[in-house]
Image (tube, rainbow, N blue to C red):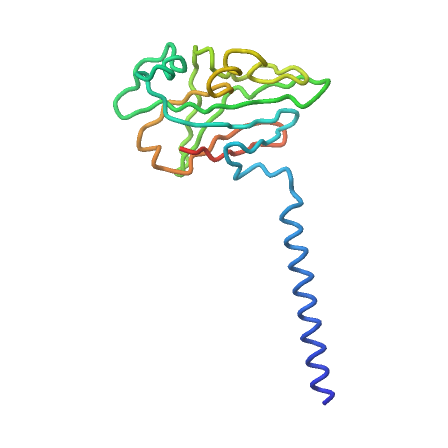
Length: 186
């Protein structure tokens, strides 16, 4: 009988230990609010004082009326390539310090091939490397991109069409406490 009690006691102890470790593991999943990988569109991420939110990503077509404004100054995409617009909102969360955007933003396909953003003359274009004042937004409140159809600034890319099949495609954002990666919904 005593052996039976001992076995039951050990089983109970093992069960309590398993529950305790499971609880610790689950709690640890929610502890890190500074996750910088696996972020999806619409989910903000902070790098230093700058909070980035990728709102929308889509291919752009020079023959589409709306898209022409995003592609101002760009030649027609060469055969086998396509323009991609990544639309982003940025907020400087500091009340007293300016911050600078990265000088470039790159997207990377599943093979690890990086594609840097290309310069754009569009009024909707995000200007890499600019200073964002304390509490300021990009795009600026009441600016054309902020009140436009997507209400965000655009990063422009020219990708080979086959790269669009190499998903997930991620936007890599450099910055304090980063980099961060955002999975693009293409």
